[in-house]
Amino acid sequence: MSESRPPSTARLVVGVSGSPGSLTALVRAADEARRRGVELWPVHAWIPPGGDLAARRSPAAALMVPQWEQLARERLLKALRDVFGDTGSGLPGQALVARGAPGPALVQIADREDDVIVVGAGRRGRLRRGLRPSVGRYCLAHAGCPVLGVPPSPLQAALEAAHRRNVLRLRLDTGRLQREFDTVPPGA
Figure 1 (cartoon, rainbow, N blue to C red):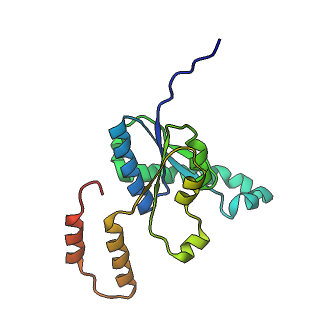
Figure 2 (figure 1 turned 30 degrees about the vertical axis):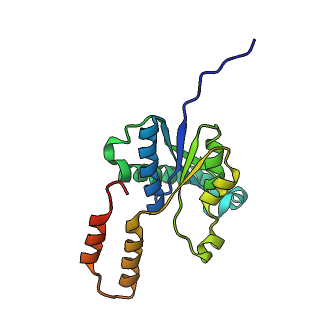
């Protein structure tokens, strides 16, 4: 006699770090979850400062783990409030804080065939790719489910250009930023 398991509910597992790219991915994942009628699982992965090996070697670091985990939880809650406000997403699912590198954590959590991993796929220069490997690339290479890479918001390029001009102490053209903001469709 075979044991029948109830069908599992599909989930959209989205990586949330608090960066503008991850917030854009969270908005897209929530829209997709509503459209598909599935659960939304925002995940914030964290590693102790200096990495897990350094934390294991230092007795003082072991005492800090609860505080680091609390900081990670607060970062995830802030990102959720930034996107959904105080009312929440209104979607079923759960928010998770996972200890470990973001890519492996997302792949481990999204362990069902009908899951979908959603990650921000921002523009990255050669130096950034060398210093911090891409979470999206890791998920594409290792996940057993589909991976959705969300491009950055069109406003991100305008914001970065404004920051560059500000560093150079050039006059900011707020009218141009306003025109770019006005042309972006809602939810982008």
